[in-house]
Structure formats: C-alpha cells, structure tokens
Image 1 (cartoon, rainbow, N blue to C red):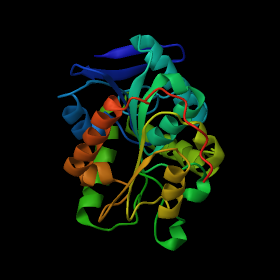
Image 2 (tube, rainbow, N blue to C red):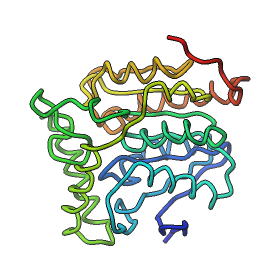
Image 3 (cartoon, one colour):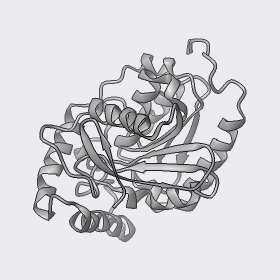
Image 4 (cartoon, rainbow, N blue to C red):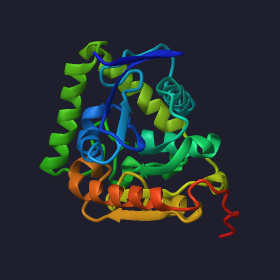
Amino acid sequence: MPYISLPRAEVYHEVVGSGEPVVLLHGGFCSLETMRPQLECLATRYRVHAMERPGHGRSVDREGPFTYDDIVADTVDYLDALGLEDAHVLGFSDGGIAALMLAIDYPDRVRSLVAIGSNTDPEGLIDEAEGVGSKSGLPDASGDSTSLVRRIEEQMQTDYEQLSPDGPVHAELVREKLARLWQDEPHIPLGDLRQVKCPALIMAGDADSIRIEHTVAIAKNIRGAQLCIVPGATHLVMMERPDLVNTIVVDFLVGADASPSRCANPAPNTN
C-alpha cells in the first residue's frame, strides 16, 4: 500500500501524472475518493500528490483533537517528504482552510491556491437553525435534501467504513472531533489574507454551508483572487459538479503557471 512516513504520522497517499506539482487536501470525514474526479483530471496535465490526513480514509487516527495547525504542519511535512519546494495547492473545506493558512504562513511553498467551500472563522458557517447544517461529512452537511446529496453523504460514510484502519466504530469519535474543530476553529484574521502572494481561486456553491458573503470577503482580501460561486450547488460542489469544477480549476492553474508575478510579493490590498 502506498504509505509515506511523516514526522508525526504515517499516511496513505497517491502520486499520479507528470508535470508541475499539485497537492490535493481533502475535507473533514472525507478521503481521496471524494476528490478522485479532480485527481484523475489534473493528472492528465500535472503531477498530482494527494494524502489522506490522520483519522481519514486509509490513515490511522492519532490521539488528541483535530486542529488546523496540525493539518498545515502535516502538509508541510508531506511536501518535505516528497522533496517538493513548492506546489499548487487545491483544498476542499478543511483542506481549503489549510491551504489558506499554508499560503499565509509558508508563502514560498505555495505556487497557487484553490480553496473550495472554506471559512476563516466559525462565524462563516450558516447555523443549522437557518436551514443549513455543518460542513461535509456530518448529517445534513449542506441542508439540501436532494437525492444526489444524500447519496454522496451515504457514500462518504461507506468509504469510511470500508477504508478506515481504525474500524467503522471509530467513525463516531472522528465525527465528534470534527464537530469540536468546526465549532472552535479556524481563526484567520481577514487582514492576514493580504499576505497571500500567490494566485488564488476561491470557490463555493450558492447553497453552501459557508455564508456567501463570507466567501466573498475571503476573495476580496486576497490581492487579485478569482471568485467563483457555482449556481445550484451546495458545500459538496466538487462531487455534485465535478466536470464544471475541474474545468474551472484547470483553467485557473494554466493561468497561474503563466503568471509572471506568481512568486512576486504583491502590494498590500487596501480595500
């Protein structure tokens, strides 16, 4: 099995394709299977590296709570283990939050970032009382009752039961750890986003569990960021509209590769 040893964990990962490096970061209670359409599409143009973080997919959980600092640290360790100085980073949900933090704290490691369905603080989440539940992986992830969303959520549960080395009964603990994470974190000041110096694409569904105005604020505070709100999509936009998401992401990455100012320090955003 393709596992890689990091300083604090041994995680499952896959490396496919050839070309410039892209790192995929999945969301909470997800696995690489939820990003399989993106992995397969991007591998036709890029060298795609994708790991399953501890407690997800085929990677064993570790003691203690989940934190975004740990996700970022594991991602940096993963880049180091691969021998990658930098990469394009595409993150979904929790993975998108980690991508934002990575671009702020380790700007030289991120060629470009794509953050899909991500928030900078818990206030960015729509309350269940307003009709939308918490992020992907928990019941009513999107507040949408369509059969497609239900099938996706059921498949995520099935993937966990079939893939997790911790066994199906451990799923409840993972859910509890994720619920605490989403209630307490992240806390990224919008002003810190102005430190992001790489090309950025911020994406969400128009029926996302992240407030649209919150998503807009993230894009507004990153100099030159592209904003994409996908109509008729929820927090699970990558799985609901994979072909559309793939087309948008590839177009963005091609443009990011061609950008002469990709690694330049931008002027502060004064908006």
